Each structure stands twice: as structure tokens, then as C-alpha cells.
Length: 316
Image (tube, rainbow, N blue to C red):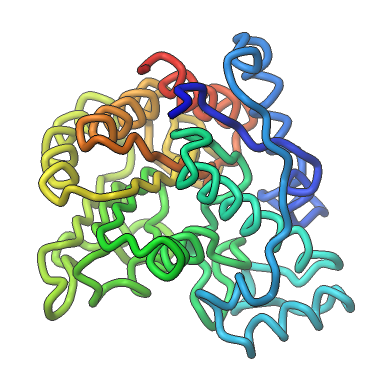
């Protein structure tokens, strides 16, 4: 298996955004890539091109009715795809399909042993539900990947860890009753921020009780408090023995983001990513797919996501 990590870069995913000064704008990919290049990380990774998903692939997670709605409103560019957070700008279907397709392409490469770690900066759209958009997220690429790992590769136990400032509600509630989706999410307390979910008592339903770990954190939380939870997170995932690890790496949990109140440093992102790599290697498969997620401060996007890639290149 190659130990050279890969990064997906291309205007097709970079174009995912909503324009007009919207927080999720098309500059975000280059905010990351320019910093990664400045750190010399581009010479230490393989570069993958974006790939577009088919409608059938998107419907592994989303309902046909919702996919049809996105297609129609992508032509007109009118209205919203949810209650008012996610505009239906022209061309949004294709750019969202590229996000899903790129996540799937990375998954296929990892499963084919072409590489073992991939980072996709514009991905991790964790608020999208099967039947709707949410929080700037049109299609839930992580959900499509999880279902593909089950349906195509017959994997049973998949781990999803989310360090975005916002709770990954679109993933959590889709798999709340699924005992084989191991879910860990650190986020700003839902009582203080969108989407208002991810409380500590939400640990899974039915047979899935105890397979989900939500860690809501108070506004202003910094590295020292955050790292107090690291052994709990590591032990929880290690004990589950996942066959594949998906990491959502939102940079909006870093200090200085304009729409959140967490105060982590990029070192938190580096440390969590390094732990996920360590767990994957100890389990003997090395499979880690990292998805960019949120983040609305250009400097934080650059340093935070570059820290993920550095964790991938340092820990061989």
C-alpha cells in the first residue's frame, strides 16, 4: 500500500459555494491550497482531480425527489434548498455532484490500495439530510461514502469523527439507529449555535445505543480543555475496530472564525488527524478519508487544513 497521501484539488470542487458574499464562497479551496504550497506540502502528496458523481450514486443517500429538486433549481437559480440557509444558485447541482464524486473517487482509491489517506478540502457537507439541504450543504458526501462502503465493499463497521464547530446532524440522524456506524462529534454546544443538536445524551437509539459519542463544548473552549477529551475519543474509536475512518475537519472550530465561538488552534486538527492515522495503522488497514467541512476565516482554512495534510505526511 502506498504511504503517500493524496489531496483532491480542482476548480470543479472549488466552485462549490453560493457567491454574493455568502460565507461559503468559492475562495475556500485556494485559501487552503496556497498555504499548503507555502508549507511545501504539495510536493509530499499525490494530486487527484475532481470526479463528478452520477445521479444513481447520489441517491445512495438522498431521495430521488430531493435530487430532482436540486436539479431543477440548479437551472433556475431561484429559491432555497432548505428553510433559508442554502440558496439554489445556478449550477449548484454539478458542483455538489463533484464534491460527492470526488469523495467516492478517494474511497475507491483507498479501497483499491492505491493510497491510504486522502484529504478533500471542499467536502464534508455534514448538514444535508436525505430529503433536504441544510447549513450550506446540498449533498451529504459522507453519507454517500458510508453507504457505498457497505453496499460495494461489504464493510460493516465504519467510524465517522467530526471536529467542525457545528454538529454533524445530517450524518448523526441518518445513522442514529445504526449500530455499525461509530459516530464521534466534538462541537460548540448546540444550545449556542446552529443546528441546535448533538447533546451529550444523544448516544444512539435501539441497538445503536452507545455507538455514538457527542461532546458539546462551551463557547470559548481552547486546546487545553479540548485535549482533555482526546483519550476518550481515541479509546471509543479504537474499541469499535472500524474498517474505515472518515474525518470531517471543519476549520470553523479554530479561534477567529466569524460565525462560531470556539478557540482551538490548528494543532488540535493536527493532533486528532494524527491519532486517526495511528488508529487506522494499528488496525492494519490504514484507511483514513478526511473531508474539509466548514470554516469561514481564510487564514484558519489554510493553517487548519494544512495541519491535516501535515499529519498525514508526518505519520508514516
